[in-house]
Length: 218
Image (cartoon, rainbow, N blue to C red; front, top):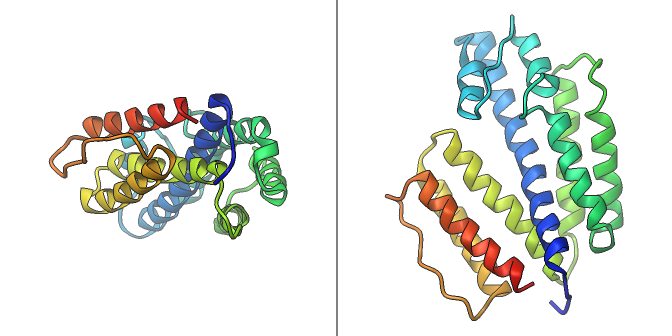
């Protein structure tokens, strides 16, 4: 892992991982809510987005997809991919070339607000995201840049999971993986372990403190 990164590059790699994971996690929940809106619970999408701090209004399941992806709110996917793209541009020299190209392709796909959103469109977006993750992880030897992207992905996974009010068991497993990467990047640092009784806020404050320390030392 002989790679020197500036704090700015490390930060942008980390947030690139977070935003890409946020898009993927959001879409997976949108697909789940879409099915429930059709079958059993018309308000499922509203309840989901309320946990994300968004008051989402829609008339039916199909309209829910459109509002979720391109709606006028901070969690719409066009906004999130633009953040990810900005991070990727700053870190371009530290990112796989094909992965960078796929990020631009994804940004172009998600900027056409006039598109009719259906399950095929969502599947295409999820497929492209999977390709990006694959392109980012195919290296035989990991570098610091790879670990910072991975950290972003894992931290967002924990944050999103807890934000939706799901059980903490999964989050604790992911946090163990976060701690392994933190130890690789900052082997001399000592951090207090997480506890399942900790609140969402306490857990995220603890994780953020770790990330801030290793970014400073990057």
